[in-house]
Image 1 (cartoon, rainbow, N blue to C red):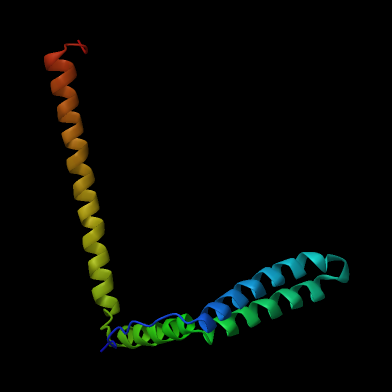
Image 2 (tube, rainbow, N blue to C red):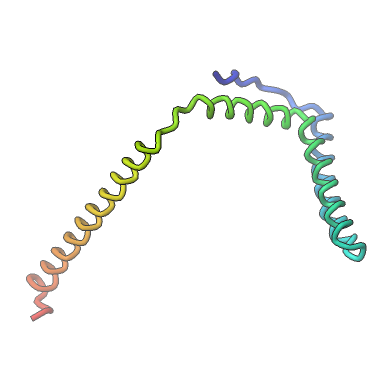
Length: 127
């Protein structure tokens, strides 16, 4: 069962953590482009390090803890799902394909009937 939502007040410390996370992302991207002459290994290392620092800073903030809690609740709910068997999946797929074919035939027949009634009977364009 999902936990009940608790309203939290964002503190200045949490705002600072989120600002730092954004700053780490910006610094990681800037470092990636600034270290272009150092080689791809240094570039990608700086980018990955900055992104990991940003992720760590976000996860220690209140919003990060809420995201982790939500993810845990969502995973717990996914485990409760009773997934269909292969046979049930194939049967339902067959029903969907059959319905699509029947609907396509119905729409084609309706289109041709309206075309015949409008152009041949009412307007007389196809004589």
